[in-house]
Length: 140
Image (tube, rainbow, N blue to C red; front, side, top):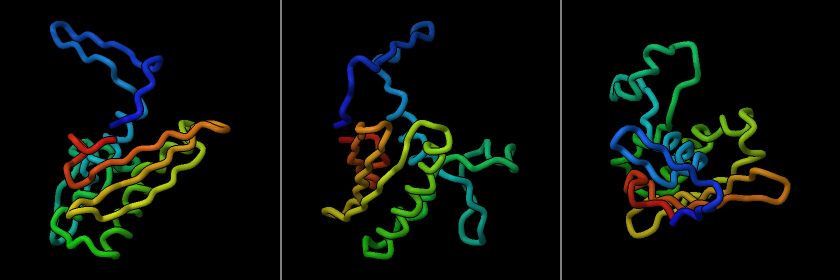
Protein backbone atom coordinates (compact mmCIF):
# COMPACT_ATOMS: atom_id res chain seq x y z
CA UNK A 1 0.00 0.00 0.00
CA UNK A 2 1.11 3.58 -0.55
CA UNK A 3 1.99 5.36 2.66
CA UNK A 4 -0.61 8.10 2.37
CA UNK A 5 -0.27 11.25 4.44
CA UNK A 6 -3.89 12.32 4.96
CA UNK A 7 -2.87 15.98 5.36
CA UNK A 8 -1.55 16.00 1.79
CA UNK A 9 -4.84 14.96 0.16
CA UNK A 10 -6.82 17.20 -2.10
CA UNK A 11 -10.33 16.55 -3.35
CA UNK A 12 -10.99 17.35 -7.00
CA UNK A 13 -14.43 17.67 -8.53
CA UNK A 14 -15.07 17.60 -12.24
CA UNK A 15 -18.84 17.88 -12.61
CA UNK A 16 -20.16 14.45 -11.58
CA UNK A 17 -16.69 12.87 -11.39
CA UNK A 18 -15.11 13.05 -7.93
CA UNK A 19 -11.49 12.12 -7.55
CA UNK A 20 -10.82 11.83 -3.83
CA UNK A 21 -7.59 11.72 -1.94
CA UNK A 22 -5.06 12.07 -4.72
CA UNK A 23 -1.48 12.64 -3.67
CA UNK A 24 0.65 14.42 -6.26
CA UNK A 25 3.95 12.58 -5.70
CA UNK A 26 2.37 9.14 -6.09
CA UNK A 27 0.60 10.28 -9.26
CA UNK A 28 3.84 11.68 -10.66
CA UNK A 29 5.62 8.41 -9.93
CA UNK A 30 2.90 6.29 -11.53
CA UNK A 31 2.73 8.48 -14.63
CA UNK A 32 6.51 8.49 -14.94
CA UNK A 33 6.80 4.72 -14.58
CA UNK A 34 3.74 3.43 -16.41
CA UNK A 35 3.37 5.82 -19.33
CA UNK A 36 5.07 4.08 -22.23
CA UNK A 37 8.07 6.18 -23.25
CA UNK A 38 8.15 6.62 -27.01
CA UNK A 39 10.56 4.25 -28.71
CA UNK A 40 11.09 3.94 -32.41
CA UNK A 41 13.11 0.94 -33.42
CA UNK A 42 12.89 -1.73 -36.04
CA UNK A 43 11.26 -4.07 -33.54
CA UNK A 44 8.95 -1.74 -31.59
CA UNK A 45 7.31 1.56 -32.46
CA UNK A 46 5.00 2.84 -29.79
CA UNK A 47 4.78 5.14 -26.81
CA UNK A 48 3.12 8.24 -25.45
CA UNK A 49 1.44 10.01 -28.36
CA UNK A 50 2.24 13.57 -27.21
CA UNK A 51 5.96 12.90 -27.51
CA UNK A 52 5.51 12.98 -31.29
CA UNK A 53 4.42 16.61 -30.98
CA UNK A 54 7.15 17.50 -28.46
CA UNK A 55 10.12 16.09 -30.37
CA UNK A 56 12.59 18.58 -28.85
CA UNK A 57 11.61 18.01 -25.23
CA UNK A 58 12.36 15.19 -22.87
CA UNK A 59 10.15 12.18 -23.48
CA UNK A 60 7.45 11.24 -20.98
CA UNK A 61 7.33 7.89 -19.22
CA UNK A 62 9.61 4.89 -18.97
CA UNK A 63 10.78 2.01 -21.09
CA UNK A 64 9.61 -0.59 -18.57
CA UNK A 65 7.04 -1.73 -21.13
CA UNK A 66 9.90 -3.12 -23.23
CA UNK A 67 10.52 -5.71 -20.49
CA UNK A 68 6.97 -7.13 -20.49
CA UNK A 69 8.01 -10.35 -22.22
CA UNK A 70 11.51 -10.58 -20.77
CA UNK A 71 12.82 -13.37 -18.63
CA UNK A 72 13.30 -12.13 -15.04
CA UNK A 73 17.07 -12.48 -14.81
CA UNK A 74 19.87 -10.17 -13.63
CA UNK A 75 20.05 -8.39 -16.99
CA UNK A 76 16.32 -7.61 -16.90
CA UNK A 77 16.57 -6.35 -13.32
CA UNK A 78 19.48 -4.07 -14.28
CA UNK A 79 17.59 -2.72 -17.31
CA UNK A 80 14.49 -2.13 -15.17
CA UNK A 81 16.57 -0.27 -12.59
CA UNK A 82 18.05 1.97 -15.28
CA UNK A 83 14.63 2.61 -16.88
CA UNK A 84 13.17 3.57 -13.48
CA UNK A 85 16.08 5.89 -12.66
CA UNK A 86 15.76 7.54 -16.08
CA UNK A 87 12.00 8.01 -15.79
CA UNK A 88 12.18 9.53 -12.30
CA UNK A 89 15.30 11.65 -12.88
CA UNK A 90 13.20 14.74 -13.63
CA UNK A 91 12.13 14.86 -9.95
CA UNK A 92 15.57 16.19 -8.96
CA UNK A 93 15.98 19.24 -11.27
CA UNK A 94 12.28 20.03 -10.70
CA UNK A 95 13.08 20.43 -6.99
CA UNK A 96 10.66 17.70 -5.93
CA UNK A 97 13.34 15.29 -4.72
CA UNK A 98 16.93 15.55 -3.53
CA UNK A 99 17.69 12.03 -4.77
CA UNK A 100 16.06 8.79 -5.87
CA UNK A 101 17.25 5.29 -4.96
CA UNK A 102 16.03 2.27 -6.90
CA UNK A 103 16.28 -1.41 -6.04
CA UNK A 104 14.69 -4.02 -8.31
CA UNK A 105 13.92 -7.60 -7.34
CA UNK A 106 12.25 -10.55 -9.01
CA UNK A 107 9.67 -12.13 -6.73
CA UNK A 108 7.37 -15.01 -7.77
CA UNK A 109 7.47 -14.06 -11.42
CA UNK A 110 6.97 -10.33 -10.81
CA UNK A 111 9.29 -7.39 -11.14
CA UNK A 112 9.23 -5.47 -7.84
CA UNK A 113 10.46 -1.87 -7.72
CA UNK A 114 11.63 -0.60 -4.33
CA UNK A 115 11.89 3.19 -4.47
CA UNK A 116 13.23 5.65 -1.92
CA UNK A 117 12.48 9.27 -2.80
CA UNK A 118 14.43 11.70 -0.61
CA UNK A 119 12.37 14.89 -0.50
CA UNK A 120 13.84 16.80 2.41
CA UNK A 121 16.60 16.87 4.97
CA UNK A 122 15.36 13.81 6.84
CA UNK A 123 12.25 12.98 4.85
CA UNK A 124 12.11 9.92 2.64
CA UNK A 125 9.09 8.39 0.93
CA UNK A 126 9.40 4.68 0.22
CA UNK A 127 7.37 2.74 -2.30
CA UNK A 128 7.18 -0.91 -3.27
CA UNK A 129 5.61 -1.27 -6.71
CA UNK A 130 4.78 -4.43 -8.62
CA UNK A 131 5.80 -3.37 -12.12
CA UNK A 132 4.45 -6.59 -13.62
CA UNK A 133 0.91 -5.52 -12.75
CA UNK A 134 1.39 -2.14 -14.39
CA UNK A 135 1.10 -0.42 -11.03
CA UNK A 136 -2.68 -0.73 -10.98
CA UNK A 137 -2.69 -3.01 -7.97
CA UNK A 138 0.99 -3.03 -7.28
CA UNK A 139 1.70 -0.13 -4.95
CA UNK A 140 2.48 -0.74 -1.32
